[in-house]
Image 1 (cartoon, rainbow over the protein chains, first blue to last red):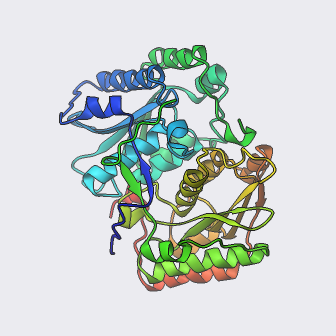
Image 2: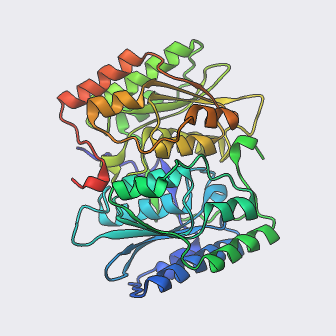
Length: 200
Length: 200
């Protein structure tokens, strides 16, 4: 299959410059799974502090070693792109780096997605097709809706089992209180709540 | 909110060159809703014939006039990007053109999403957050699974009502037989079926 190169047109998904600086030229490795999540929640906080998107961050790690493969933050507003949720960004950057649309293609090196908050309906689907074999999140969908009023969409009943059926393990609520604190910070800063069906 | 420009890094979502040529410099207007769908299904066919992605196309139209706002085709394999489904591509291009993450922000000019096949779980979520007020599709999820073996994900029960609750009308099965024929063509050409949790 041919890959048409067209550097001058297209939709360019970018990370904020502060995050590019964090990632530049370094191998970041987090052997401790909690430290992975603490780092991801830190990105969500920085995204709020820098005003570079919504209060959400995500990252893809090698499940075994804890090596960071890619990170993403919510970029809906600055990029004018409603699909640019943190999870979609992290998945797209990881797949570009690995030149693979399936992050699970090397079964000896399973990849996991960490997200500061539970994925919305879109990101739940994006997780399914990404090839990760593990999903870990901090704040729950109920937290996101209660604190921010964000709609997470009509999540299917038994969604954890639906992921498990497809070979994806789920860990909910890791460092939940720390993740929830960032949602509260966004509320204090009066960030946009964009359930876009309601318009601005 | 600042928009960091960084033209040299990021994930670039591109359309195939044959589609860029179709779109270049022209205003395309389809007053008849069936003609909109016929054109979209034609794109899905061309995407198979050109080997430039999976057998799916989508487009955003102004619901009233039928003016095309943006088109997309499935680009998962050529871009190494599992989120690059046709609907996500069309939404991202339309939002970039309008410089708005909410395609419904001008309530006097409602936008609609046409897709050659029923959206998967991810694209159902992407539809919710896009700001469109109408979703029309050809082939059903059952067609996609029966003919291709693609997993559409655990679609929530009563998903049509869930969209309606959020102000999005749904029309299912428009020109379904024509859309289904393209799925069959993809099968004959032995295109990749990428339920990526299963790996290659």
